[in-house]
Image (cartoon, rainbow over all chains, first blue to last red; front, side):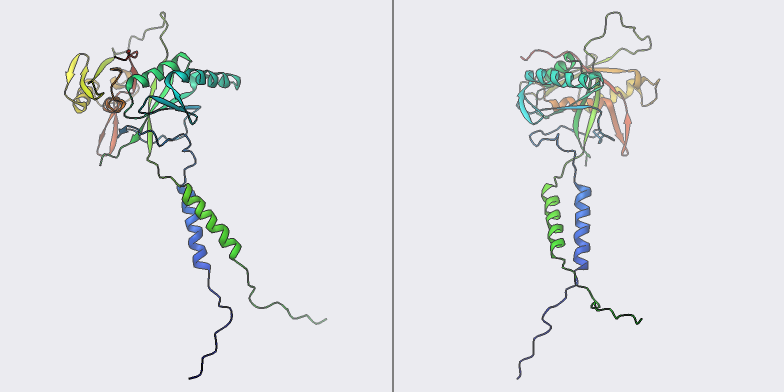
Length: 146
Length: 161
């Protein structure tokens, strides 16, 4: 039997569906991606609460202090002792004053681990108060309660 | 003058390879940088350092509810008491708060005027404090949040035992 001659040298594949799907995937990942998660840390297991509904907008002038279960504070990615935050807060306060902002209007977000000691959370609040901060937000993870 | 016939072929072949390369790189970037996070929320607390001695006292102010949370040796919750009266659990606490302030909301409502002062043992697990704050600040009924007391503050911290 005679061998069939080969088909056309170049086969045109229709790429349109693949490109459509790929662009849809890119769009999905772009919308799902959260760029504001820099302040979150995996070392912290937040306590659960049914009332901890996500905040509507960004918090005004936030200072995030994260307390680990071992009693250390994560501030700006650095692991420091609870009493060492005073120096950092002083720097933050002077920076705010230099840029014409009132430290009283700044919000200190406390992301404390559920296993941390309450006394340590209170100490953080006390140090913040001594530095002139008086608005606090205790952060918790939203529990759907299912 | 006679019009020249087009010399171009009917179908122009565009090389898609560079675009597909870039698109796949973008997908890879978004896929690897994607992090699934749980939604988080805040409990707002306003705690100035101390009220001045000559500060104007509001006659309309209702005396604060004093909530005491005691811890066992391992940090677990050992007892709850409200204004000195022991309570069984956080559900009981919520019932007492609803009895006290009602569920009415508004600028002049009792819930709006009442303040809770939390006095917690140093070693108490922080998750129990959040449970207590949840119990006094609202309740979920049929998927809707009914707000209770919003003014929450802490008593001065105690020394570690």
